[in-house]
Length: 127
Image 1 (cartoon, rainbow, N blue to C red):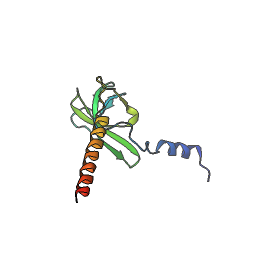
Image 2: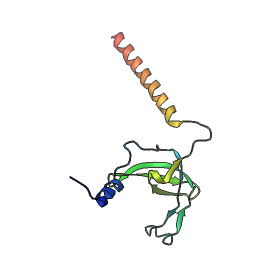
Image 3: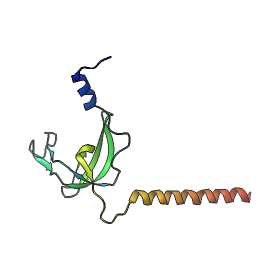
Image 4: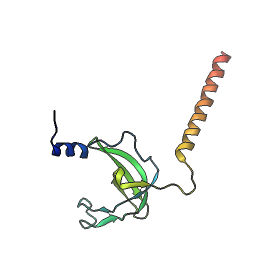
């Protein structure tokens, strides 16, 4: 089966985002282009800039739209609002202190699991 040029463009434009999310919950991000009101926000004029390019926020939720496009719900700090953003519209901001919350959480889970397994093992040996 051969595809016409138009069909190939349609397929590539609608492909699914990467399997794993680029950003994680709670990660600090920056928007690379402004978010404008497409008419769906009744509190602002159509085409008004809701969030300027360069605004910073935190990822609150990760979801999918039409099961192929990943949408990050980002709470923008200065604006006090939350908007859905695509991966291509966001960039990561490295934390100033270099603290990795995810790594710390994984370390704690592994330690807790090891302690629990050791406790179960000692209970089995005591029987």
